[in-house]
Image (cartoon, rainbow, N blue to C red; front, side):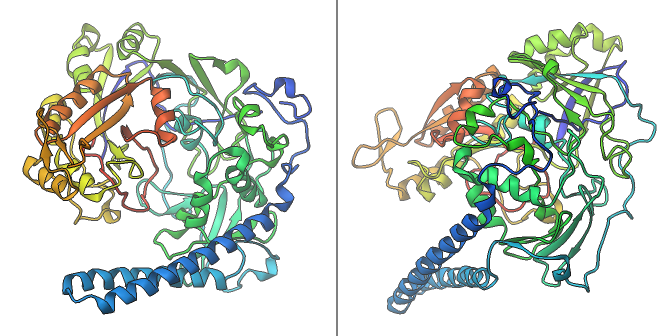
Length: 586
């Protein structure tokens, strides 16, 4: 559970803190193409340029990739077998055998995907199996409080810099403001009930699983609409996939994302479709939410200049909030306004949510300024996670006299997991022994006990705290100069320099730079303490503080060796991540 220290003004009404998004204005009038309120001047359902040939091109791309991976995997298996039969050391043979088993399992998945045919298919409703057991999730309890009042304005602090773009994908789109603008308010195909943990409807009002638990059949809610009123259709899932995987979007992540996480999507008509995953999974319908719809008409100007043309456009979404032109003060503020006739306002699981008429995000770099604005009533809620602010800056008369209420509480899941993330494609972290030694060289518990005053908890893995989704056998490595030096020695760093830093015989020093946002002086101090203790292990940590937007861009472009940050995500997690999982839980 995530511990949140939140301060709120006692006059604030009861609200739901879930949010967003937008709408658009004039496909034939590119003079307004940079405005957040831009709307395409084309009929709903108009497909983006180039989409008509996308399914065929994508299918060929995937089939070619499967063929290449099949050939490479077969070659690797032959080489492993040769090594296995020639090897005399039993421990080495055991490792080779383990690798062989894994490779043969991976090859079988490739073969299965090849026999299943194209990734994108178009069929008719008659092709849907007749013996499916359809579910709608309506046996779950309602979410939210029926006594919560609708209306009002919620003014919040948005820490850090103003986002580089409002685009949902492409360069610099995965900023800290992406959550409030998109991820936290978009209604996906289905979601998970926060209390029962069971699947509940989203834009799909019913679904059914195949017997092998790899395929889910969905039917869209006939009421599902975007914030501009356009009806959500099954083809829109392919539109979203087309936009994100196009070379024009300059976002190579999504080509691998869709390839690795799904093996088929079949469209039967405007409201019915199926999604097949490479492997069977629990809560299978939820994992199919990697596919989300995009309004095709909004992308009527999609092309080579997409990144610049759509830089500040906000697409209509399935969520309850929209950003209008008068809701933006560039560089300072973004206001989300609730859609009065939102399609899901009376649905069972959303009718008591999204209560606030307006959510105003104020971008303030300095925490001290945000605190002062809160004290004078310019902000309604202040989320504080830094112990020095919580324990010292909030010892003020307004708190003691009852004008400001302080509350510390836990969410269901630990969010987000802060930590040091390693770029394993760059030296020295391309060496497993260096990565393991690096973990032993970080004195995390000392930071928690002293700097964070015991308010945080160390995570054993990226996915700790998620119940049955957490691997209980993964444990965080403790601070140990002896074990750190032992791993560094295996990586070849055996010679101490005059200043105590280890080096290889060729003179390569054991040095790593950690990139982080400079908006928090306490963070720099914290990393400085980690640097001091790492030095005792023969490791030189260089601090690379940057403006939050610049730091994020450097990390996304994979130019950083390591970074201190947090990745927010919606549970359940899908797998254990490699590298150093963050050691603390807020």
